[in-house]
Length: 262
Length: 263
Ligand SMILES: Nc1ncnc2c1ncn2[C@@H]1O[C@H](COP(=O)(O)OP(=O)(O)O)[C@@H](O)[C@H]1O
Ligand SMILES: [Mg+2]
Image 1 (spheres, each protein chain N blue to C red):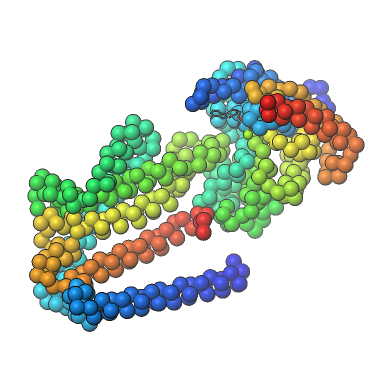
Image 2 (image 1 turned 90 degrees about the vertical axis):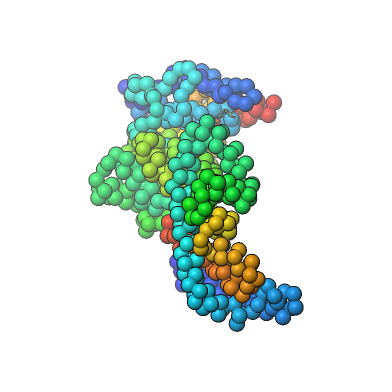
């Protein structure tokens, strides 16, 4: 890379950061204006009231417990979703009957809000973390299996032919062509899966969880404590952002070879 | 060049191929017979859709003929084999592998020791003029450079027959001429049997010892023209009287087939 292009890139990076700062300031201004309104002020107290809520919740001894419980649900649900979605996606790509049977199910269930069938899981699995994890598992599985399946389907067959004529057997083709070619789609699937996990967290913790960010938001809403509620909501957003950043880094490491349409 | 006792390297014996499509069947090849000699450079021209790629894929072992067969050294071709290398029009480089890792792929499959494989790969990367790009990824290369890598990759696997399907079709005129010259040089150094598909008549004459003209669908061999211009051929050869004569002759045949397609 020449000096000039690195310079250009640096300049662009600084610009992006400045933009982010401007965006943040604008958000704070909007937030501040909302906090001034008579009605809106009740739901959107400003930073100076929201930030201390961390301390308040910590004193009540639930802050870390909530984060821990939610992260456990997300990690377990997402983990199960991922390790089941991966083989199912490959099976769907390999055996048409599997795809023909499973894909319609997924497309049907995917459009139903998780909140709607969460009570059904409680009836079978009881209350607590178990149904919450299973709910997240179902949601992340559906998103990820479809995404990975479509990725495998889109692999350029010429690459497989090129490998074949160079002496690759079926195992080589799987390990050296299909797997690396699928990596970008797996990362996209992880991104969508984590996002699905976080967005279903509320529904998941409606299953009588003892702690959790989603459960806490619900219970705080019953006592109209908007400051800690807002704090938890923002916390959820921050967790999401951190996860996205981590995936970005992994993606750059693993798929730097990819041609980007920009 | 001429030797009476030359060996038949590839034999295409009454190959017939039909595809089962959505709206009925398409006959792509309708009885193709052809003997290709050892170390021969063959170019195939013909209107698009006449079955050139189908024939190449059958020789490569990527497709099976509906009836008839192709033979390599007298043995019927079944499936792919490393003695038949292929260069595709769309490069088909593995985007997650660097240039050198792409070129080493065939050697990796053969379980060649890593050090030796690297040495061989470097040799061919240098031969196609890409020294210094060993660790570049395909996305960082131009079309011409990508095709050079693909050619190096095919050569590194050391095939006896090289099958090239319009390899320079997507390149600009200058790059195309440059790659033709390079390919000729390589072929003159280490003679391999070459089966080269093109729709460019100039390209066919400059490269080939024999030009196969195929007729419009269903594909058959219409005529075989001997190119009696001695090697080494250069770009100057293109203003040669004999070159122009052959060009007019082949053009005329191809153009008639082109009109057939339009009908
Ligand atoms: N997989 C396929 N299924 C159905 N028809 C095909 C298939 N591949 C090629 N054909 C048809 O066979 C004919 C020959 O194709 P091809 O060998 O690609 O021709 P060429 O390389 O000379 O342009 C064309 O009419 C094409 O539409
Ligand atoms: Mg073709």
